[in-house]
Image (cartoon, rainbow, N blue to C red):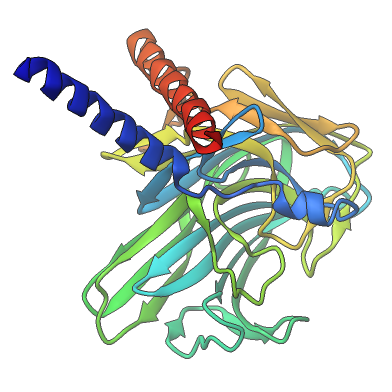
Length: 355
């Protein structure tokens, strides 16, 4: 009798915990694309901190000190320069900074240059006086001050492959951001990793500083920045800068995006094919999964869920190795079962709330 009673209450507690998890608010990655459907967004891959299951979003949370992208451009034809952007959100204490590691390609000249930028998103008049680096400060069209640095020009040949890298470290009084580029093929940096900008943000005291991806909440309900809504990580194609939208006559490129976990670079749990944080965009690109990579080509642009991330990457030394799968079959079954339980819990919750 007592054991049955204990099991009954234990089961109810278990269900309550599941309901609590499911009832937590999750972000909607499509909120911008639905509200502004005629705006051209950046295309590639992005992790918003949610799995999509039907019309439901199941949130997750990631904190890391390093993010790296993999980019391979096999062929391209564009009349205008374009950017390939690695964009992440950095939280320092109670402030949020937007970080960009950008490669701008100019197909008409077969040249590229590197760019880094830092923007304090905490409020409209958030200062950057505590930011130092080799770059300069400019005022954007929105009136906000940006830290920006440009390095280049360099020649490239196709196929052109590289890794954009953002590393974050901190002490008790400062946060250091390293913007990196590792050449793989088709450029003068082949086999070399270059940290082309070293930015320091000074604080009286730092009690936390990490790159965040979270599907539980937006940046801020009171954020003055349209489009700067998500704690996401993006590796996307867009215009050269200043909110430009670019069209491609032809493109074949492959992308993947990783974060550092326990000393290794692993895939984000899930990806969408568009980035909402950056103002730049494209008008005619689509993303498709090809194995553990994502292929970006010309086509009718739309915005959708790409599914789960797979694989890992090794960036040590002069070699770069993309590994096919980091999730074992048993782990995959366990994750699928947990998602099934969460969906059932969501259904039960709706039934209970309607009684």
